[in-house]
Image (cartoon, rainbow, N blue to C red):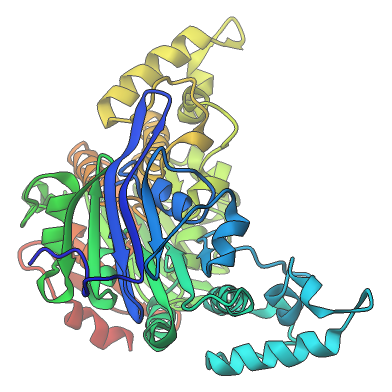
Length: 512
């Protein structure tokens, strides 16, 4: 059932919000409402208008038209400070916690004016109020603890507490918390903990939850708004939400059964392109042995600490194997892979989890990033030919559908999905036949995910072999020919996923 609100008079109401940037209509008469004690999801592909809508609510942008009301009163924001005075706060995925400060100093960062006595900062009052807000929200963190000792989810809880406290100081009736992709860097246990806290928190707040992970939206949210091309395309109650429904609304077509492009899955070849025998890393994994075959997608599953991340980094030479044997095309290479450059020269590529800091040079344009792996091939008279760079980039941009006005656009200005496709394009150009992919669709929207899945299928059909660590069990299951499950640094089992796909339960019983 489509709905606009759970009551006739929602606590927060955004009506007919429109916003343009030059000739681009970012939002066109968008509506969004939220009640007290409610978690509302906001989903859409990159470029759908989510960020623009949230920035208008947070006072970063001004709407060209439309109105915002809180508790029945029309309000107007000239800046983010105005929004904060009405109890509106944002927790961005990048976070704004300073590691060299304590928890209580971070809680009240920029708000020290509330703790001045005749111009002198009272740390005693800061500690007292820190204890009170942390206790109220049932956040079990010592306020004098240094922020650099906190986990990612603990840092998020501190940011949430900061916004709730500031709303209290502003005499806002109900804090409105905007959470922008809060689970991107979290594992399942931390996500479960965060959701428990959010369900407790909504008893005295209103929460807008933005995520590309649709399974989380379905699990957590009371209602969900879907945006596409800057317009509302649906608002659905919890009882009506499903991942397939949200996907189809986001991309404008049905995606049932083909989200992971399973019809393109092919059986791997017989040739073994990579083999590990009895490989150890004394800090991370033990007695690891497996084969990767030509044209295979081999997924590695496990929790943080299972050893999967360290194993993938060792294959690419970022860390080292302490002992064991490594073969590429039947040739022992363990002693000759001591760095990522060594691995690259042996035909291995690597897509890191953190594409912005490790996979791209953000201040360089698309054409320079995408040709990094083939610069030697593009030289003319000892110099890299700009003409050749443009030619190969144009072909790759067209092939993998990188959406940008120009190949000279800086990578920092691209959407997450297009950034990831630049990284993929870089390795496609390299011609390397083994590619390790760490969370290849993390932080990208559902449409870009499906495009990346298609590219992965095309790559293996061309003889490339992939080792992947997916963002979810469903992704691993949907893509893989075989699934390696690791726990406590050891391989627990290897599951065939060619003819018959296992379920998440089949995987979990080996992991926990």
